Length: 103
Image (cartoon, rainbow, N blue to C red; front, side, top):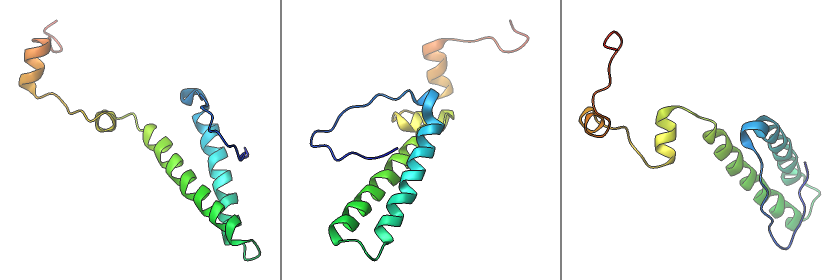
């Protein structure tokens, strides 16, 4: 994976359910490279600043991608600003559902 310096950002669609692990590996590899560049004492201030900005962006992207991978009910509710229904709300909206053995 490499980065291009482009004047106009492009939208790229990636099927995360299929490519999540490969994308995370590539991003972690690139992050390691950017951290190494930022710590290189022989580079210019401009290159260092770019590497530091790229590092910050990669860290945010990785965190978001890893957070999205949490498929727990609580995580999904939090992502969409929702909450669990109370038992009363559940009964009101969905009615009584049979339990095991009531069937």
